[in-house]
Image 1 (cartoon, rainbow, N blue to C red):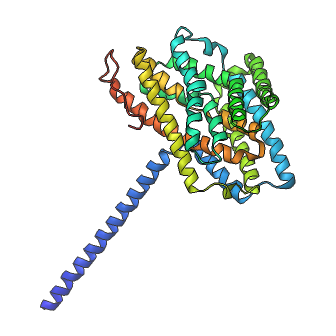
Image 2: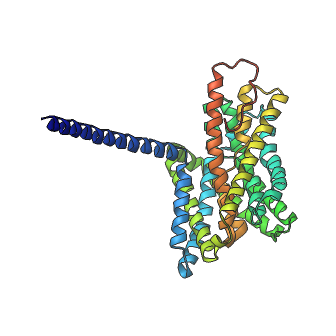
Image 3: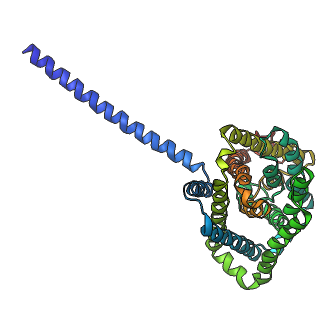
Length: 364
């Protein structure tokens, strides 16, 4: 009788233990899903699509006639991309808020002067292939949508951010190839002034055509932002596939290793941290308001992936695969850093007074 009772007790303990194990397993599975969703939420969906496109190009690169067709498609994508941006961007928006000229000067100097100067300094820390891509990255204009969104979330001067980001994008169409071309030729890369001017024309003509047709199609694009977003994303994915197809055929993955990628990421992090710190201190030294400081920091510290990949394709041709890697890493890093900093500013906004708070850490 005692043995039967002991067996029953052990059976109950075993059943309880199995039930506990199942509960622990289910809890672990739920925790794993939560962690996966958290990680996924921090990865830009556009960047994820680009990475999938890179993987597809690695497995099935375009060769022969297919490569020729993809190259023609990439050229058409560049024309369509800048035509659509010309039709969307309003010169009136770029002129609005011109009274904040000190703010705009800060943003423009950061975008087209501070970044290139820091890039020239950082090239000594970079892997051998990086100086060219780094110069291109630092010469790019700011983003429009992300600058405005982060400024809004942080409680900054949204009209000024809209004005600066729009003007930066407009100026970048011809300033970026000129600055990048100057830096590249100055440091021994074979890019002629004629080629750079040809790229400016190739970007500027569809952009101007879009501006001229803006009175007829601008309202449609404003009502249907998905149309422009589809052109943005679709064009960039085509260019990425074309670039990495060339790269795979030429043996791109034999030219770069994990150590190179880590060094590239560290250079990108150093760039954005340095720019944000300089802009924050500079804004306070020049007595900008908190709202203006936020606009300056977010508009002056970002670089446009949408503009960068087409310009890289035109400047570097079949070697663009390696060129866009620093830009892709910078894109993800800037989104994560700016999202964190925007939340930091927003949290302090409740306690903010007219005086500016202490310097926030760029990675808070």
